[in-house]
Image (tube, rainbow, N blue to C red; front, side):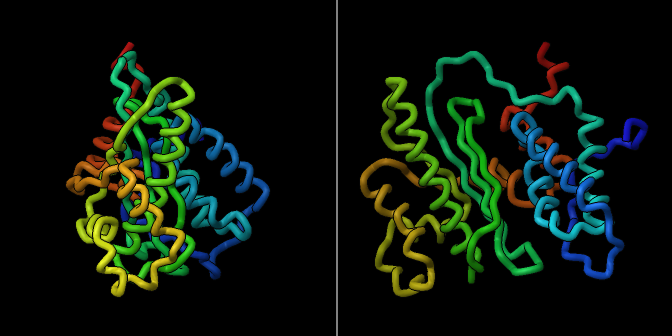
Amino acid sequence: MEDCKEAATPIVTNCLMDADEAGNQVDSTKYRGLIGSLLYLTTIRLDIQFGVCLCARFQSNPKESHFKAAKRILKYLKGTTNVRLWYPNESNIVLSGFSYSDYVEWKLDRKSTSGTCHLLGSSLISRNSKKQACVALSTAEAEYIAAGHACAQSIWLKHQLMDYGVKLEKVPLYCDNTYAINLTKNPIQHSKTKHIEIRNRFIRDHIQKGDIEIMFVKTENQLADLFTKPLARDRFNKLRIELGILDMKNIC
């Protein structure tokens, strides 16, 4: 892959990966080794996390199409070898979270993918990209479940920061779905959402306790979008920079 053509993004925008049962089989050991190495790399290259996690879903029976998608991530990495996660020297200790979800983009079982991230000041300290455990029946439900995951992470981070003498009040949690936000504030709507699992409802309790404050953010400013689906080059690069994943040549 040293002489391969570089790719602008780790995964194509219209990527619709599936089991590809009719596709050609590839060496599963080689494929798993590649995915394992890429998963290790996501520690400092969070911009490839969604693509790597997507490819990782096919490790049990990889096909040529899956291997091609994984090789595209290598092509993207080849052109971005200087990109790293950057932590600026600042004293702004303000914790904020972002939650986002696609809706039934995963064609095999129609489950949505939750994406969350947390920033301390302008430094990215936590992120997650995970397929939801149940099938959401609406966009609002998918967003509500993602917000619940982000809430749990916010509470954990608050407790961790207390060990360092940093006490935070309401942690802002940004979501771009107004109906999901209303669900966290208005228990009267419970009759319309009885199918949502009880374990995802604790977010409402923490809002009432004042631990977090859920707030609206425009979709174009939703940083967690990077962890939920393939994006076009311009939007991908914009979110990557805003998350602090920068080209070191432009800093040094």
